[in-house]
Length: 115
Length: 114
Image (tube, rainbow over all chains, first blue to last red; front, side):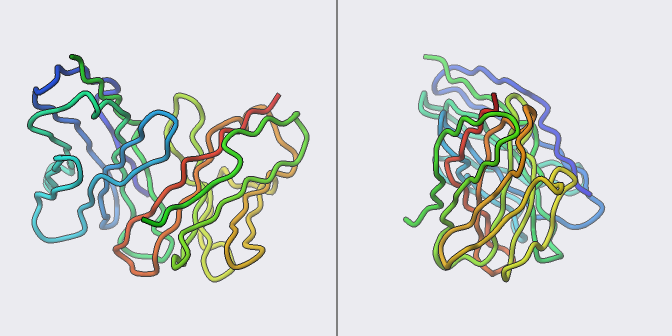
């Protein structure tokens, strides 16, 4: 079984400031890691994914995340945020083995970018 | 870019009634999923579907729930006798057959049980 913890439910930040959204996971099996973003009244859009290889992965809209196996973390970062980044961000994992690959989500972090 | 489409966007139903939520996955995808998000809670996995049968289901997916792929394009979630606690946002997702491909989500159906 897997579990995902997003340590901050709400993160307010001023425009053009850097931001880090934290994610820790627990799993008895190897997993793939994902960040999804949800804008108001929309579905979940994939930001980035870690499958293997380089621990620093780059995604859309200038976001990046770093996989740290020893700390079982996958924190999301952006060096300079924009008003349009205001959204809910979800960290998720899925098992590498098995065919279903169902996602286990964290509880989400609401990022609010202030002018 | 192809996308997953869900209808309706909002469904209001009386408690005890049957409801069917509809999804059209991306056309060349092989794995299909339903998730739900109760207001203020996590997105939770309900069921996965592959090769015309359920491949995994969660504890939430009890006998009141069923899924079907009635034709080559639609993927439906039926709740036989709705309860107040079924009120949630329901998301459909699909994935290609390759093991490392991510799931693509629809915009969801908000189900309100009165």
